[in-house]
Image (cartoon, rainbow, N blue to C red; front, side):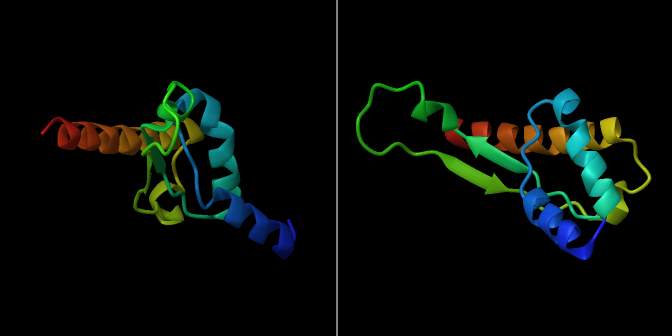
Amino acid sequence: MTEKEKNILQQELWTLVAQDAEATTHCFKISLKTKTPIVPVVLWDSYKVFNSWQFGPLKTEVHFLEPIPYEEFKDMKTQEIAEMVQGRIQDKLDELKREKEK
């Protein structure tokens, strides 16, 4: 892999949304190969854009979670990485839900 290709992959992998551990394991193979950090991303209320008859602005939120350095997942299988990332995303979703219920 050339340095240019590695830089492109690093930029593309900087933001990663993992909703389904099964579907995202291939993304993690690239992270392992390029030794790039994984940044889980949480989208809150993004469905409103498509499921609303409201005209005008809608509020949705994007939360970039703490990057997961390569050293933390270098010895894991892609399925294990996917489950770890999905768990962090779910934790943040649960936190946001608790905040909104107050």
